[in-house]
Image (cartoon, rainbow, N blue to C red; front, side):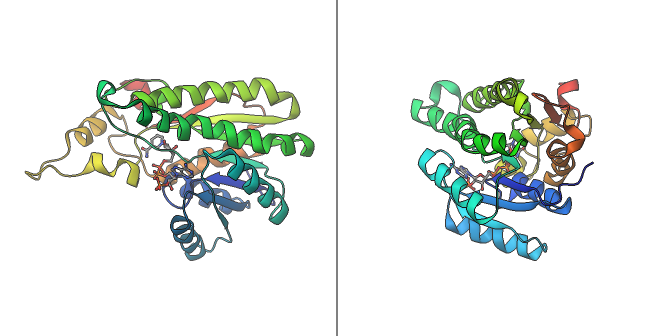
Length: 257
Ligand code: NDP
């Protein structure tokens, strides 16, 4: 019941990082992998990684905030690979700036990629899912869907909004056998969080690194590969009765913080 044989899985922003790890997990469960990224260089880098891992993935250059480009890409995927059975809205950005120092433009940019884009991409794939009689949408949320912290006002607002978009898609399209769930990663060691692990000029650990490890019951940063199992579960028939749920994969930090 955890197999994804023959299913077309479209993972956004999946040249590396969490999206790549999820795609690798889904390929291992039998899915055909399709991904996009924002520029050709990243897509080429992604394709080389998939090839090295023995995965026959197809990559597209597409900015997920551009509705016309998304619609064209989804149409191209449907023509070249097939109707998308599984969508993972993974592409995301973060800007760590204290709220009163943040420009409205920066705030909007984060909302655009982290909240508006999942709306745009979901809207592009849902009609074909309805026709096909099933679909799985997985929105990569965050523990910031539940919490606020200094410097991440836009990100927390976007990821909190994404949690509610997830519930709304579930309510609106559940009757068409579409399950929309979220994954809320805790602190994952990816390039996005690399600045938070950098050593201080005196060689000591970054204070945030120490904070995270002390606040996470797991006592460590999580690895991107640890998100693959939960994503495969939410993409598979094993989770057909799970809808509108956010699965926090955070090493227990939300239970403890
Ligand atoms: P990365 O920044 O490493 O990867 C995200 C990918 O999305 C990158 O390839 C990025 O390109 C791409 N991207 C950015 N903007 C766009 C766009 N407009 N159109 C298409 N692609 C775009 O992120 P992670 O792997 O760390 O995170 C993946 C998801 O998980 C994100 O949604 C993030 O918010 C979420 N998350 C991450 C956590 C962590 O600890 N790392 C914790 C909680 C949630 P580029 O490299 O050019 O930016």
